[in-house]
Length: 441
Image (cartoon, rainbow, N blue to C red; front, side, top):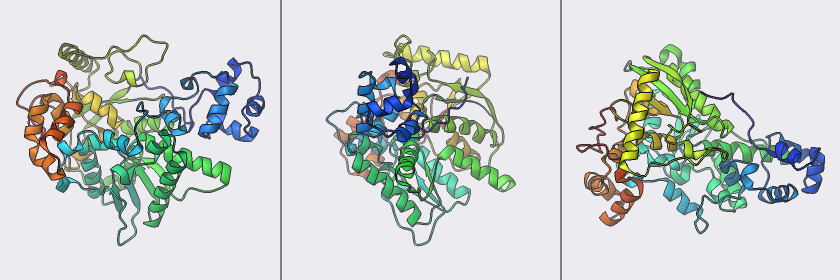
């Protein structure tokens, strides 16, 4: 079940580790770390993230304890002390890697967003900044833009470098470059008239708001736009529209909403907003909220499993995958749901590999798009279940050729992103998403 929401912007264990180190007051630790007492108090109470240098001084003052005893990995990346597990990499390479198999799954002429930051010839209300990693499942981007159009919104949509938050630069230790990236992004949104920036990735919301809070608290500079995530944003839009929402289809869906309450304010907020969004869609029933962080059944528990628990058993063989698919379908039957809607785009990709005739895996945005009559096939999920890199490349030739890559590069992408152990059956059409499991959309 979902936990109570912890709405601190910067979740941390500074107080707990301070007391464990025998440091009685915040002022004493602030002095040892050479940080102004009022600034440190903002950090301990979760309103402010330390800079890289401040973090290192705090860590030293606490006895050089492991980084992850103070912050989770997502915040360590934002602080600039965790480089995505790729010491020799760059921010640009990281953005390219998280785009996954985009060039196999969506052709250039199917892209409905910009990869830069265009300047429209008239002001818009919303900057729809759809992040980097969402490109790995490009139907999510297509569905988001289609929903925004169906609801009559005034917006500019970007993804990839144009939608990036700047966190990759900070994660690789280039704090000044990351700060410049995130600040110019907010200034761009204001320049096109947008009052709100809507992001897909939770890391983007964290980066924008945490950096904005640092400027506000330390420099007195107000952020020029409101920052929110796509799920709570569409909840707002649907509630405001009321009976004017142009529904095209009444669905029959019983959904378990999956997410990770313990990660950040953004993950928690979006997790709960996913459930609220689904409740607004005709014919959809939310069976419950499921925190996939620490359940042996959850395919993405490895993302946030506590160190105190035994190591998570990853599925290494086709038999392992088949067993988990069967177990998840049985769990769905027992709890009375037919669909899992994972909040995070990465979690959607992980869960997609375990879809079956007994369990649909579909994101809330795609369920909304389906009800509005504008959904796109989930080619990532179809390719994952096809499982043959060679067949995937053969089926998607017309797509990857539009990107100017050759067959060898396409095959390298397919082998990196789609592993044979997840194959479920033959006869899947990646382009249309049709074939087994029958619930792929």
